[in-house]
Length: 303
Image (cartoon, rainbow, N blue to C red; front, top):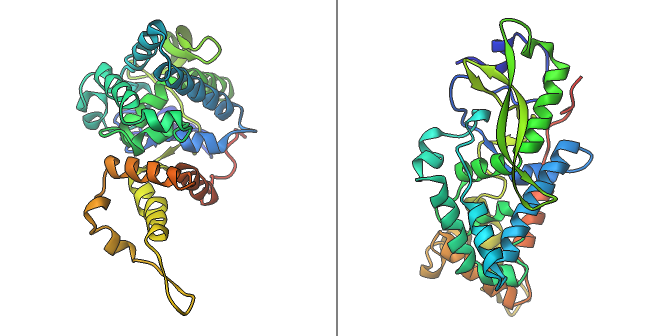
């Protein structure tokens, strides 16, 4: 396995993920990491703008009665082609492992129009990185693939900056090439075709990813949500006040044995709606929990 730096002979620290170029890497593009990077990271800020524009477009269509808007949004969700340019993820469990890209989009569209519609109307579900908490079959690999396609434009712009900064990418025998790629236009709220310049490794385009944007597990993973915010909320729900003023809480391992708290998206949805009815926003609590523990890597900029 050959890393980008080894393949191109680039030495020293680099501001991009130094993944291997000849195989998939077990790292995943995490949309919530990108969000928490935000300003002053220009590329992260633009990527977040794409993510929010896309999600808002689909969410508004779900809550709309306009047939044209609904048809357009469903079509937008069915245009996630395999993003092999980054070398991220796992090919056997990416789009190719879950059926066609259109099937993934249809699954998300159907979930947002049924089980998740209440969360949208209540303003609980706000970001694309929260879909894995409630949609079966959408986890780190699918989330990474979807995110890559939505933020392809900012990633291509970052790659172009790296090409300008590191001449090794275009020094013989290495070369770059122009490609027509689908990108999300956050201003027009639609997909567009953009010509981008990318490095070519062994005849295949390479898209560079800013260092620190990937993880082995999502920050907002279903498991983390269940183990932390959800079970903590239920502990409070079922807490008993003793005569001496102390509060008795059921241990989390015992909560997991309750039939109504089986691990899974159905439980996530039920508890989130129940919490909202009681005046608590479970997703907001989880967002705060994750943000408080986020420790971004230092020195992400190019030297």
